[in-house]
Length: 152
Image 1 (cartoon, rainbow, N blue to C red):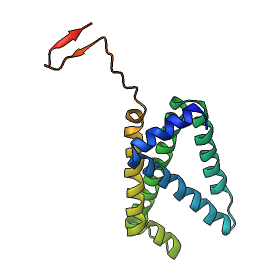
Image 2 (cartoon, rainbow, N blue to C red; image 1 turned 30 degrees about the vertical axis):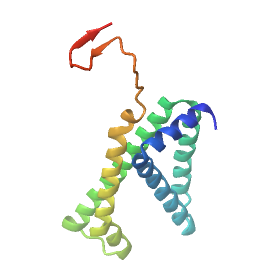
Image 3 (cartoon, helix red, strand yellow; image 1 turned 90 degrees about the horizontal axis):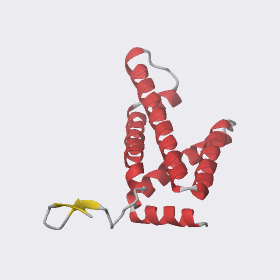
């Protein structure tokens, strides 16, 4: 591990919930990729493997590139969950699909699952910048302990 990866790891140790949400979303899609590989489709596994490789390479490069990778991942999961929710609405109210697998994926539990991932991805997107903020203690100006504006 290089210095950047140690810094990223320490950030995730300090913000444990954020790391859990990110890891859960990645491992879920990795699991789904293997599930689809078993039934003969290798494309989902290739896609999630490419995303995970992007995470690994960006973690070696810089915090900024890792933050951008998190942003890309969050947008992809937002798109995925939104499409699933829209398909669930179409399936429920406009034209139901008779196949049980599709009905299960787009039914009540599938929609709740999509909402969970949608909220998780929004959380990842909203707090990615706060996670990697640089904290400075020696500001040239700001408020002192009494609440008065001070410029040094």
